[in-house]
Length: 147
Image (tube, rainbow, N blue to C red; front, side, top):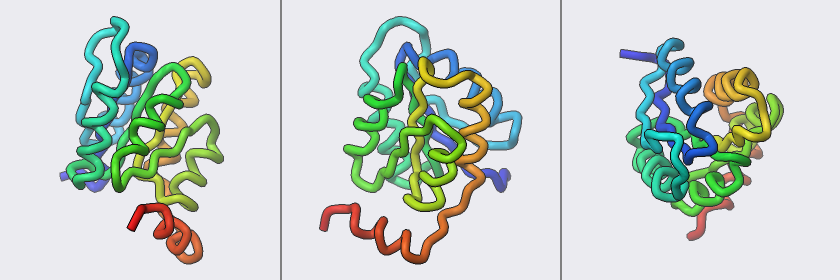
């Protein structure tokens, strides 16, 4: 049994190549990874794949989600429509770290057209390894979900 967090991952066609690289990288590092698609680089509609991925994280089936597209924006928007998901658009080491430490993000969105493959792998490692700081940040995060 792995002590590493489990990961649900999804992309559209524009995030397909990095998704494949992330799956290989994360599995090699000891993470359990579930691929929610897409399974080809053919043009597709990202909500079809991102929503089920985010819902699985929200249900507690996976510890974290990673969603990918061209910019990551659409994917973050879809994921954040799922109650219980806090998806951070990650484009730097700082956004990966702060998304977890300050916002208790349980999902990260990556834009394949905006960062390098190596950055995507590094940012995912940072995101998955960073604990939530709690404290004043927990109070703020508790204000996010509707009552």
